[in-house]
Amino acid sequence: MAILVADLVTRGTSLVPSHFVRPLSDRPNLKEAAAVDSTFPLIDLQGLHGPNRAQVLNDVHQASVNDGFFL
Image 1: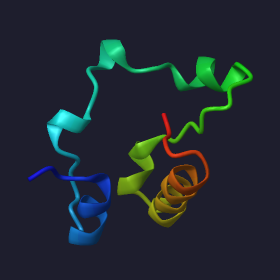
Image 2: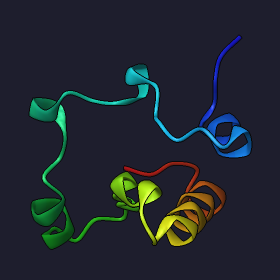
Image 3: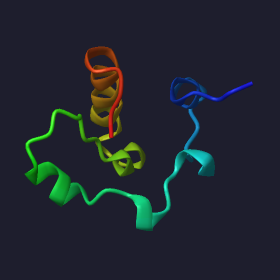
Image 4: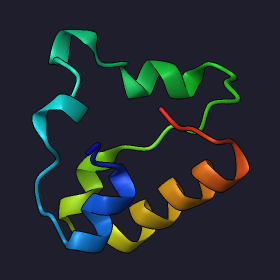
């Protein structure tokens, strides 16, 4: 059975499984990506473990509903 990001949220998981995490060398540079006029929603998931958790979850929800994906 596949685990979805929504499953992680509803289970209250505090760690993202490693198969969802890209290697550092393969991750986009958010500062460079934000400077490009992009239509992709950019969300920094590090905020899931801090005081901005609710905002990050809302951003993921909105990107999923409005765009069907996020980076």
